Structure formats: structure tokens, C-alpha cells
Image (cartoon, rainbow, N blue to C red; front, side):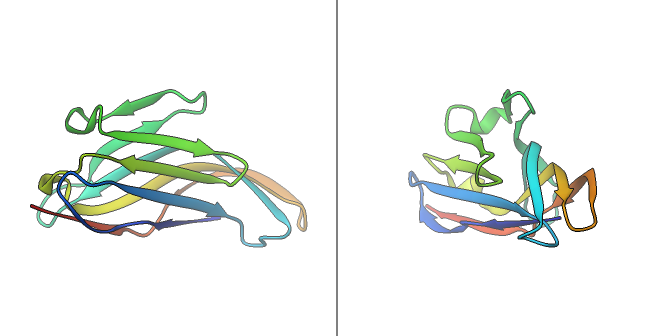
Length: 129
């Protein structure tokens, strides 16, 4: 099981971006994956990774204070994807953003089922003033 993050880029302050994090199995045609819980973190040089947003298995969400009202985390189980919609971006939102998720998988070829915790690679978000 792996996570692939995308959607970062350069945007002016006040603009918007949507990050995506797609879960996939080792055998795409023979594995079903379901994102149960997910988090988006961000990190800037010299600082620890910071939790930005989280979504629970039941769909409940939590946000870091500075992004409340501006960012929205959501999940599409049909697409095995978690999104982070970022609005009214500020220069201080500039960071590398990482997704993290607990994924339930069913591999029909082996067969095997289980849950794993995975991290996606980072995607750079740069907000210019």
C-alpha cells in the first residue's frame, strides 16, 4: 500500500490550492484499499512536522488553529483519496505538506487483508506575498 500526494505549487497570498493524497495497493487491479483515517501535516526547514488537519473514520474533522475556517479536509472512498482544500492562503502556510493515513486493504490475489499506516511523499506549497 502506498500514498501519493500531489497538488502543491506556487500561489499568491489569498489564493487557493487543493492537495490530493491517493492510496493504492501493490497490485492495483487485485487490491482494494480504503482510507479509514487521514492526516495532513506540514513542515518548514528547521521546524518539526506540524499536524494541520485530520479526518476520522466517522468523518469527523479537526484543524490546527491557524487554518480553521480556511482549510477543509475531506475523503472520497470511491477514489481512495483524501483532499486538503486550502483557501485564503497566507505566506506562513508555505511548507512541504505530507499526508498520512491508516489504510485498510484487501488483496484478492494472495489473499490477504490488513491495516497499515502510510506516509505520502511531500508536496511543496509556496505562498508569495
